[in-house]
Image (cartoon, rainbow, N blue to C red; front, top):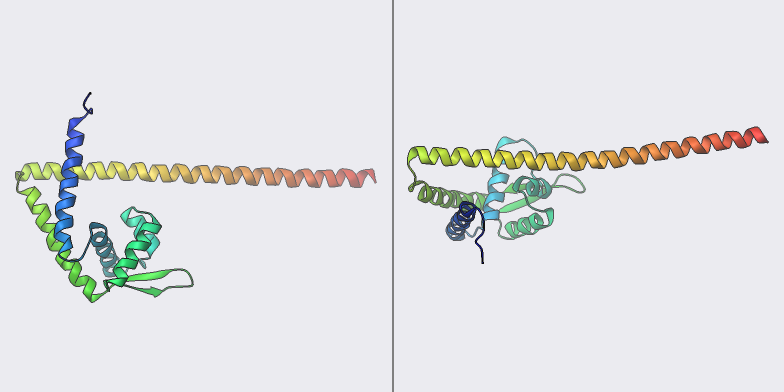
Amino acid sequence: MSQLPHPEFKALLILASGLTSDLEVRLKEYDLSLSGFLALEAIERAQGANAYPMTRASLARLIGTTPASMSVLVGRLIRKKMVSETSIDALAKRLAITSFGHSKLAGGKVAWEDTFENLSEALSPSGKSQLLKAIDKLNLTREHERKEEHRAAYMRTLSKQSTKNAVAKNHQQSRVAESRRRAELE
């Protein structure tokens, strides 16, 4: 049986999984999952910036999960009294972090820092800097790929819509031309 190619990639995934597990254990002390922690942090950041109202849909896009999964997570955070919702209009609801949510998030941030420090202790300052630069580059590349995929899908949609519009216009012009021909014959 042959081994997987790129053993360094396997090692990276195992490291990421281990770090995630370590963080999840620490976050449990604050009754948070990793996704719950990330959601609270995003809601807090949006509230602080007064940029736009955070909704379940915008939170799902920001965190990179499905709206259905985010809806379940937000429902759980609401039941735990960490998040509240207020209506913006008939469809959308603004998410806000509660004072209880702020206290849990503060504990989660300590867990986050502890996990990061445990990783950082194994690296020299230059090694840590190189790692963070590499992570930034990988994230930027993935973000560009995601944006390109969305752009391509949007262009396909536009292309389909413009084709439909052209067909409909042509069909309408054909009907008008046919009506004129009939009128001339009568």
